Structures are given as structure tokens and as C-alpha cells.
Image (tube, rainbow, N blue to C red; front, side, top):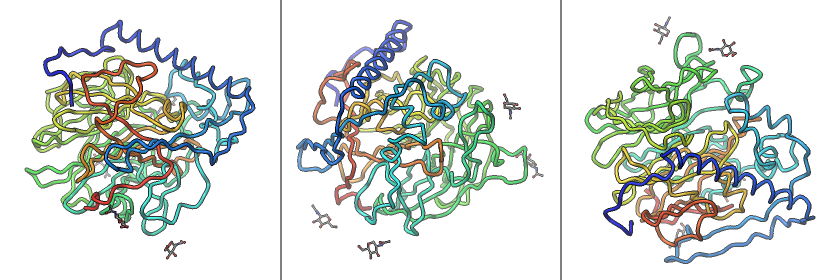
Length: 461
Ligand SMILES: *[C@@H]1O[C@H](CO)[C@@H](O)[C@H](O)[C@H]1NC(C)=O
Ligand SMILES: *[C@@H]1O[C@H](CO)[C@@H](O)[C@H](O)[C@H]1NC(C)=O
Ligand SMILES: *[C@@H]1O[C@H](CO)[C@@H](O)[C@H](O)[C@H]1NC(C)=O
Ligand SMILES: *[C@@H]1O[C@H](CO)[C@@H](O)[C@H](O)[C@H]1NC(C)=O
């Protein structure tokens, strides 16, 4: 809920001044982080991993509102960047972005002592009630869920989770390129509680022989999302289609008569002629569909209205978050306001999420700040060591959503983890953000860290 009704659109960071201001903030944030971690590596800090602090925030009696703190962990001292970490970042990222805080190096280095902290080796918990963000997660057959960069579609009494099947070998196509896995296809899982998932198989498979086909195994298929078209009664999938060098930068479209496929691949294109990498689609209450994509070399986001059948883009288009270099957009709507969570661009390395809000899907979009709460500073500055991909509304629970994110594991992409956490709109205002103005004009978006949490009962479809 907004406090003011008739306000002027004011996007702090869309002007040149704002951009410089943002870069400044980022630099200061990085400097702050590096200092903090140097201090922490000097202090001998016997971190007792069980000494977790839970601060219960009581609004109603929902378990969603518990904020969990994580102890700060001590980093082994390093003189320079780990060669493993630099290799993991790859050539897709500009040079200056290699200067990550040390903890990101640790995250990216598979030989790091902190490795088990980010990617616990344990067997998946035998539990069908609780979420364990960052732990291994298996389907009803006991296999690791392969649905990365995914999204969820609700059809009557069933949730469908679509995502990338990355169950292959991780390798580098060139010495400077990002770690990759060949295209296997888009997987679909079904569930009626959003927690236990049945594998529905590969609903859009890779093309194994035809080298000129977009879905040829050596190309790239990322971030598939599916919406239902009421007019044509078709399930329409949009995805990021690219070559191994990420120079094709296109969207791909596929359709199916059933949510569980098979999907028929139609074509790829650059929407309205602009390059498109990370993307998502959004179906509004009034049936209008939108494509939201990182464009102009990932400098800007573009938002384009889809045609009525959702199979193409129209020329109705806006550029937003100009020069801000945001990717991984995840869009949702709450009480006539549109919200978006984005990440920065740093390859597989995690970075700080930002929430944005708008009165119209086409903008203007305003930036609210970092929505992450709990964990510790490093958790909050790295989106809990993950990157958002989708936000699922919870039927029957007002103001609450599930934030879906990927904890990418560039050393072994098929073992990338899922970080699903409760997201709430409004409610308790958090302490002022460290480096950002908390715009009072929009409801606050909060993503709460939990090691273990469950949905309230009424979420069952
Ligand atoms: C998981 O727990 C259930 C009941 O608690 C039990 O029946 C089942 O055997 C367990 N599965 C594994 C793999 O431990
Ligand atoms: C290979 O794929 C391209 C692009 O989809 C298509 O035009 C061509 O007909 C295909 N070739 C064969 C032999 O199927
Ligand atoms: C990708 O880049 C490498 C090195 O820059 C080049 O050798 C290769 O031909 C490129 N491949 C494509 C598909 O563009
Ligand atoms: C929620 O469900 C669990 C088990 O399904 C049950 O034990 C519990 O009483 C339920 N809680 C509420 C508030 O309905």
C-alpha cells in the first residue's frame, strides 16, 4: 500500500547523476564488505554453527515472519583471488567485476574450505513439509530436481514447475567462457503443495543432430517460463535462446496443448530487434502478456507487450532501469502494484538483489532497495548466495509469496541448489537500508532468510 497517491514518477537511478550515484554506492558497498571481512579474518572467531539467533517478528501468527540470523563465518586469509574463482566467473563479465569480495571467491572455488557451507553434501532431508534452502532437493522418485532458472504455473489444482535440465557435464567451451552444460531440455514437475514434486519429464527436448536448430545441444537455453493463453487455450513457453558465446541473444517460443507438453518449438528472434538475454514473461489479471528482458548488452531492461496469442511481441515497448545492468527479472503483482526482483550481472557469481515497483507493467519502475532480510550481511549482499528466477503467489495467504532463486554451482552446474524463501509485501518496515533510500511510497518487499521453513497449511491447492 502506498502512502501517497499523486506522486511524480521519480526514478533515482535513470538519470546520469543517478547512475553515477549508484556506481558510487556499489563501490562503497564493496569497500565496506572487504573491510568487514578483513576484520573478521583477523579476529579469531570461533563460529559455533549451531548458535543461530532467531528473531520472531509477530504479525498475526504466521511462521513466514520469522527472521533467522546466521553466524558470520571466518574466511581463510587469501592474498589474491583464487584462480578457481576467476575461472568460474568466465569471460562474460567485465574485468572490473572480477574484483569480488573474498567471500565470493570462496563461493566460486570448489576447493574452498567453506564449500560445504554453500553446497552441503548431505543427503536430501527425508521430509515433505519443510523447505531447506540450499540443500539438495529430490523429486518423488528420489532424484535431484533438475529445474534451474525456472518458473511455476498454476493450473486448477496443480502447480507446474518448469526449468532447465542441467543434468550433464559442466565444461568451458573456451578458456574465457562461462561454465556451461549442453542443452538437455526443459523439465516439468507437478505438485499440489509446492513442496513435493513429481517429475513429468522433459517437455521440450534439445535437438541432438541438426546443428542449425536453436535447441541444438551446443547452444544455450535458459530461464524457460510458461503462461496459459485463454484465447487459444495453449500453454506458451518463452525462453532465452543463445549460442555458446552468448552473441545470439534471442528469445525462443514454444507451445503445447497440455501443461506437461510436449512443447512444439516455434522460432527465435531478437524482440523488436533488440538483444535479449535473461528474461521472464508475465500474464496480467486482464490477460495481457509481457516480456521483460535484459537488453542493450545487459545495460537496460526492456518490457514489451505480447500479442494476444502470446506467440510474438508487439511494438509497445519501454526501456527501464536504464544503465543499471540488472538481470534475472522476476515479476509479480500485488493489489494493483507491479513488483520486480532483479540481480546484478556477474556471471554465476551471486550479487545483491533489488526490488522495484511500478503502477503499470510498462513503468516507470522505481527501485526500492535490497529486499533480503536475515542471514548475515554476506547473505543479504548476495541474495543468500543465489539469483532470483521467479515469484510464486500463495493462494489463500494474503501478502505472501515464494521467492524462487538458484544457487548456481559453476563447478558442477547440475548440482546447483534451489533457494526458495518467503517473500512478503508490506507489513513491518525494516530498519532503513544501509546504502539505499527506502522509498516510503511503495509497500516494502521483504525476503526472509530461513534454514528451514514451511508454508502455512492453507497453501494446499
Ligand atoms: C522417509 O521417511 C518415511 C516416513 O517417515 C519412511 O517411511 C521412509 O522409509 C523414509 N525414506 C528414507 C529414504 O529414509
Ligand atoms: C534444421 O533446423 C533448421 C532450423 O530449425 C530447419 O530449418 C531445418 O529444416 C532443419 N533440418 C533438418 C534436416 O531437419
Ligand atoms: C565463439 O567465440 C570463439 C572465440 O572468441 C570463436 O572461436 C567461436 O567461433 C565463436 N563461436 C560462435 C558460435 O560464435
Ligand atoms: C497444519 O497441518 C498439520 C499437519 O498437516 C497439522 O498438524 C496442523 O494442526 C495444521 N495447522 C493448522 C493451523 O491448521
